Length: 157
Length: 107
Image (tube, rainbow over all chains, first blue to last red; front, side, top):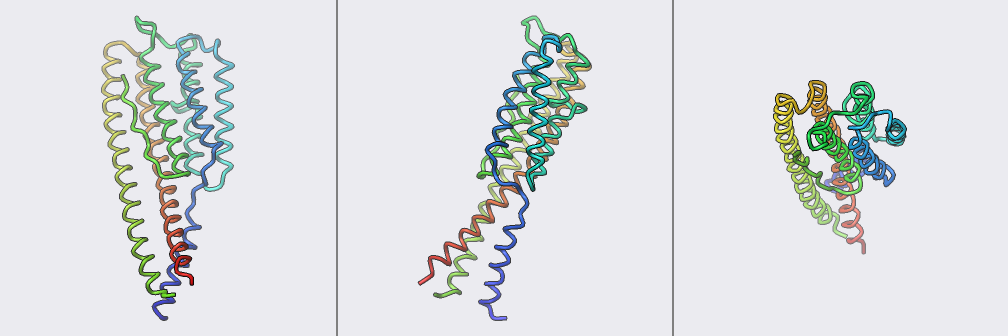
């Protein structure tokens, strides 16, 4: 085969291969789901020194919104990683949003304990860890649009 | 139109795109991982101190430790997806290079 044909064949093969990379396109809806549910989750965590019953409606609405975000992500072709991350976030047997709400309801129904200043060291740590996990998902969605560096985990205080 | 010259230019361009794109991603991935490990180590030490001092309960301590494991899984899954996205962008750059090189050489 002449060299020029080999090169043309290589170029065509490359173009075909480009179509085989399996990752979903950027979605503004997916990005917005991650950023808005991060804010709502952190807001709920900050209220968890109070009884769960007081915030039951808000917690349940948040979990439904996270289920919707999971279903949205899972319905997009070639979006396994984002769907898996939403699955971990919502799982009541883990420790992220679903797990935290479950722990509040079943393990600290009267609210998590506070220190002398009225704050909760536990909830500060939970909030920071949740924030880092959401940031990973947000970074994944942002990278679908264009290459961008992920934020470093914020130092806890 | 000199196709040999065009393909040589494309080959050089591809080499440059792959070299720069892959290096940038590998550097960032390593930096992310190191930052996560350092942060996790500091956090786990602090949780132990907080538990020893009575600032958090045993239930809360165990919850925070498990949370770090879930955070590690989130990092790993995210890194896999980001690698795919970066790869896709890299290949798109190669495709654009091929198309623009050929189009520019058209009489």
